[in-house]
Image 1: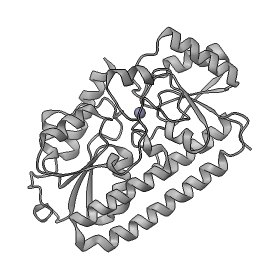
Image 2: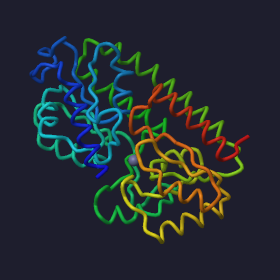
Image 3: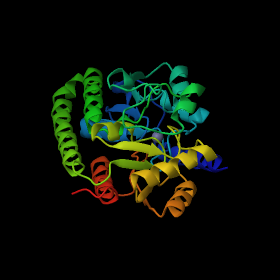
Image 4: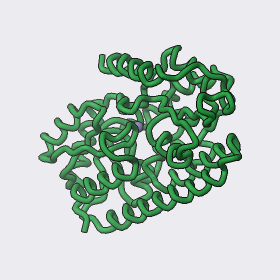
Length: 313
Ligand SMILES: [Zn+2]
């Protein structure tokens, strides 16, 4: 029921968001303002593209900003609109509906970020990811790799390089601007990486109790461990055995915080927190646009939430 509600809301937002655009051919020169038209699959990718493209690129968010992207369903109208883009930037094996759409359309140039960013197969898993449900999903064939690279600023730097290369190829006249913007965003990502590493270096506990397994690469990068209520897909339901295992981990690690997400029900997290005497707090998966601020400020808020939860020095 919740999914249907989200899909309807998402279609409404997309329709409103694009109602001002005319139907355009897919070459840059035919665009309304001559700018490169880029459709980015969801928030962190759109943010990165905006940082690099600056004023010379029009970026459209394919998944509306307030919608959980995993199960976002594109309507036939949404798919038709994608044909108007010069370039589509996306992460395969993350949004099945978008994977299908990309296979259907032929006009735009497609940038698959997984061709550059190093992703870990789900069967191998990341060292920090001890999700109770991920193996089950892997067996379904729903995802073959963990897509959540955007929570690792280092991998975001790699994605930024791929985006800059693509923009410069599509719009060589602005290549110098894109290169300069790339350098700025990479410095900002590198600074963020440094603060996260320093802020999470010395902590009483090192286990993140997450709502779904979004923090595998993050945990890996900062030498933390992730346990999660759901697996890679936030809508997957944990079994009673999974929940019992979670309760055990929370107790054995002395965890005091069960993290929740803004766009996913916190019912199970609330119950687990009550049973174990922990509290709940939001940890931003950056899968949707933050209510305030941007990627860097939301990641900085996450650092602050984690430092409290893990009792870092
Ligand atoms: Zn996710």
